[in-house]
Structure formats: C-alpha cells, structure tokens
Length: 321
Image 1 (spheres, rainbow, N blue to C red):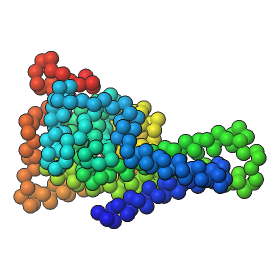
Image 2: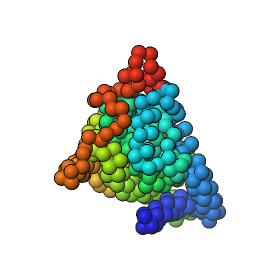
Image 3: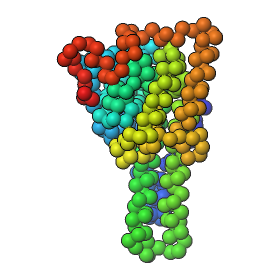
Image 4: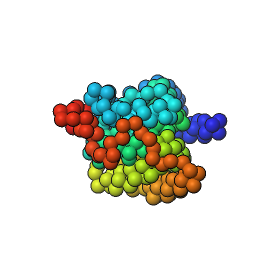
C-alpha cells in the first residue's frame, strides 16, 4: 500500500505541475503563482467535497430502503461482505448502463448507478458491478480519481481559454517565444493531463475487478455485466459525461464511446482483457473448491430491471421508473 500511495501522490503532483505550467503560459510568472495557488485550493476543496461535486455533476439522486428497496439492500449486503461502512446510494437518470463510486474515505463514500444499468442487468450482474465499485472504495481509489478529474477538468478549461485568446488576438502583446509556449501548452498540456488520468484509471481497474469478484463471490457476474455495459455504451450516449470528459475515468466502463484498447490513449483497459482476467480468476476459484454460487441474500433468480418490481404490484421503483 505505501507504494500505491506514493504513486498516487506522484500522479496528482504531475497534474498540479501541468496546471501550473499552463498558468505560466497564460500569465508568465504571476500566472504561474496564481495557478499554483488555485491548484492547491482545488486539491483542498476536492479532498473535502469530492463526493458532492461528482454526484451533482451527474445529477445523481439519493435513494433509500423505501424508494429503492432491492437496490439498497444489495448494496448493503455487499458492503457487509466487503467489511465497509454502508455507503450512500444514488441513481442517475441516464439510459446508458454505467456506475461509479466516490468519496474521500470509506466512511464518506457513495455508490451511484444509472437507471440504464438497473434496468438492463440482472441482480447478479448488478452485484458484480456494485462489488467492483465497493472495491474502489476499499482500496481508497475514489478520492484520487475524483481529485484527478477536478484538476484535469481545470486544465481542459485553461486550454480552451488559451485557444479563445489566440483566436481573438489575446496574445498580440506576447513575444514570439511566449506565443510558442502558449501554443505548446494549449496542445500538449491537455494530452499530458489525459495520460496521467489514464494511468490512474488503468492501473486500478484490474485490481478493482479482482477484488470486486471476490466480494460478490462470482467473477462471472462481473464479466457478464461488462459485456452488456460495453456493448450498450457504444450506442447509448451519456450526455452528462460528454460535458465533463475529464471525469470519464471514474466510470466502470468508458462512458464517452465505450471503446477501449490497452494503449496509451485509452481511459480504461480493454474490456475483453478484463473479462479474460475474470474468467481466469473464476477457473482458479473453481479449482480451489470455492463455491461460485455467491449466496446473496434474497436472490431474485435471473430477474432483471429495477428489482423492486418483484416486491408486488405498486411497489416503489425509485427515480428511474
């Protein structure tokens, strides 16, 4: 774990350095100092408000035992298995199946799933997805990913400012060297920020897949969910995510295109590679004599959709109904 924290600190320091360098490109030494102070403020603000920021960003609505009884119960069951405090539970009214977790610590965490995910996946598949997100909470990935999204978004905004300024003559009083520096910052800095975000996401998704599979006791539930989510994300747009691409790495599958390659320019590992790793884990567990039945409380055998429908006619379905 110490090495993980060291890597995280280095990645966040890299994002801060990029932001400061862009400040220097915009306003010279004074701009660099201002950007440094702004970066410190953003880090501090994100540390304490990361969960609220992201949930508001994607229009998530909190649910409870009354408004989403089976969804809430499933999260509670899996949180107990993971030996985590009960996170707050949210639904995003979005047809694209996807999910993420956020919060600065396990005691201040939240899990959010889209209405599309709850409608499209079976209870077992949803359990695999939620277990994956709980693994991010247990590994304390959520804070790092949210802070990276915040600073990455700020870098993108600065790049747009530079583009706007150069387009309308905002750099006429600059020297040639300053103008070249601004052009380089405008082109390179967003790419560099994106690469750092990729490193944060890609290095953690495989780990969360494995731990999530162990939490729900069946790797194939998650692999089946990934197949459905990846396929649907390619054809169903996520408008909220498109508006904030710097936060795409927070979702279980890329919400922007759903396409992924294990290459330098991917925000997520290739889904086929993730599925292969989960299948290998399932075979390993089977050879070890581990029951892959899962044993979730009150399973609804293969039922899909917002599972509170099975509670009887007129049962509350939550904000996705």
